[in-house]
Image: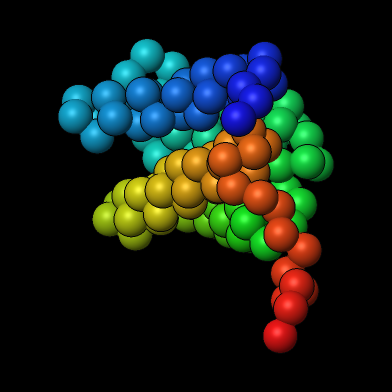
Length: 127
């Protein structure tokens, strides 16, 4: 297991998404984030930064591709949330899916990047 500075920075970036989201759920608004649109922009910008900091190595192999899938899904849901932010319950549901997908992508990417799971090639080693 190898934890480096990139893992720490990515973790801080994801925490900078999850902590305000938790405050947003509890209070309805936090400083600088007043609605689903603000939370979506925050998640998109910081999530993209976290993925960039981790780099390609976190998205290789079977587990890495799964992390990349969740990252792409979270980005797509984040954009839809941004577009449909004024639609009440729909935007709140989209926002929950968005934040959940970010968290799953981060966990899987960190597992691959730190070496806790091996980035398998996806091919059977033996039959």
